[in-house]
Every structure is written in C-alpha cells, then in structure tokens.
Length: 365
Image 1 (tube, one colour):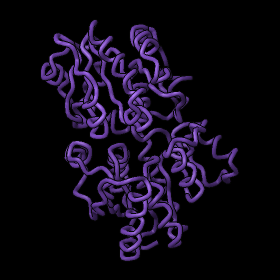
Image 2 (tube, helix red, strand yellow):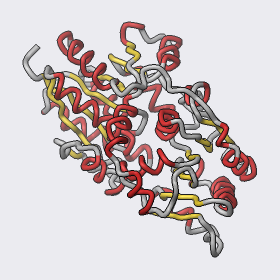
Image 3 (cartoon, one colour):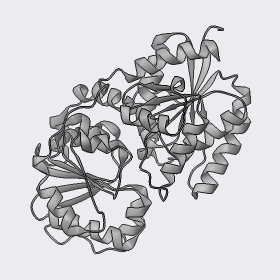
Image 4 (cartoon, helix red, strand yellow):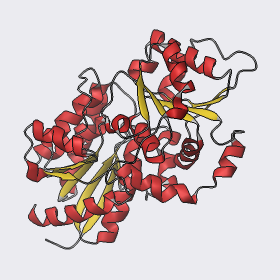
C-alpha cells in the first residue's frame, strides 16, 4: 500500500459529526491512512452543523457539497450528483459513511458504482419499520458496504440473518460513546446548569425531531400536552429542532408560570452536560437513546419501535406511544426506577478498533 492512502469520511447531519470526530483522530494516530472529510451540507443550520466542528475539534471539512434543505429525493439526488463529480478527483482507497441519514446512502451508492470500497460505521441496526426513511437508508447502505462495523452483537446477527458474509462484519462497539467519554470530564457541568437555571436530577430534557412526531399535528399535539403537564411539576428543557418550529407556531403557547423552557438547538458540549445531569430524557432520537444508556440516565422514547433494542434490553430506555399524552406523563413520572448496564464494547475505544481494521483492509483494497 502506498503511504498515507486517502480515506474519505462523509458527514452530513449532526449525529454523523459525533461519530466522525473520534475516527478522524484515530486514523491520524494510526498513521497508515490519510482522512479526507466531506461535509454534504445536509444539516446547514450553524447550531446543527457548524458549531459541532469547533466543539468536537474537527478540522474544517476538506470539501463541502452545500446541499441544504429539500425532500428526501431532492436531497439524496443532489448529494449523489455533487459527490459523483468530486470522488474521482480524490483517488480514495475507501469511503466511510456513518449512520442512516440521506448523506449515508447517497455517498455509499456513488462510491459503490465507482468501484470504491465502502465502510459503514454503525451497521446492522434495524427497526423493521419500513415507514421510516432511515430504515431504508440503513438496509441499502449495508448491502452496498464492503466492511460493516456494528455497535452491538444483535446488529451483527441482523446482518448475518440477511445473508451478509461474516468476514465483512466487525463488531467494533459504539463510536458515539468514544466522543461522550472524551468530552464529559472536560465540561464545566456546574456552569452549564447555572446558565440554564436548573439543578442536577431535577429537570426533564427533551429532544424531538422525527417527521412522524413533529410534522403530524395530532401526534405533536399529544406530545405538547405531555410536556406542558410535566412542566407543572418540574422544569422541562426543550431545545427546538429547526424542523419543529413550524408546528410549534400552530399550538397554544405554554401557560403563564409554566416551567416549560424552549431554546434554540444546543452546541454538543452544552447538550451533553444537560443530558448527563437530567432526571429523565424524552426523545425520539436514536443517538440520544444510546447516550442515555451509556450515562445511566432514564430515557423515554416517543416512538412505537427502535433500531437500538439494546438500549431497552440492557439500558435505561423505554418506548412509549407518541400519540398518548397520559402514557408519556406516567412514563416520565416513573422514570427514576429505570436501571440498566452499559453494553459490551461501549468503552470509548471503538474508533481505535475501526482505524486499525481499516488500515489492514486498505492494504487489500
């Protein structure tokens, strides 16, 4: 292998950056490969994208496709067209994609059709819900990938059941935990809590962004009722995703004296501090399900299913129907009893394992 073979790392949305950061560093430290960062621009809001590069100490991307907003078809197609024109110029030995967003499947398709090996970090997760665009992205990306790095043993088993050869599958652990473990001890938690006027273990933290929850007025109406009811008893912090703003405008504002507090999306380290000190978290995010399990924080997930079942069987997560305010309130009230354990290989060294394996694979590719 030529010295410093180039490996393209693709990121497009907020969760991708959290996973890319430790792998970028591990590849640099491993020494055999040269990472090249492509930002697709799928998340274009500064708080959802730009701030993460400084927070996570990721260098400015080597290329930015500046895709911006659009439907699934428009966004995926635009990424493909722009990545297709860029990739041949890079002389890449491998393209690494993360998670299940539109950028993931778009760039995996382009790389596969150009004969460049694809490595998928966070492979094998399945909700078995084909109404989820992310499920389509996950399954198709795994079929296209030459190397599949799974976060859990059940994810590896999913791939084996689908006929993926075992020699392509590597159980590497959860790379998001690498970032969490690296940053958590360096944050001034007390300062963040004072900034938001809350005490540790005496507030609810909320993240909601999935179209099935925030675009549907009836479903989001029930979630909104649950938040307002919970805010009678304790502070409820709700950083509002850009997607959610339009729906919020159609709902009644919180009652006078309510302890429901809305904010803009938060920088990674600020959000992590609030996550680590919350009494309970209400979310529809896959990544937050994992982070709460890693931290031992009770989590109520407003979804009918999850592609991360290990957060339920071993962690602190519980599924609750998003369209039932009463069940949501009860789950939040009872969350203090949730107990779990940290799954295997969620140890902060996943990026090292992937970087080492990529170095060996690129010798063969």
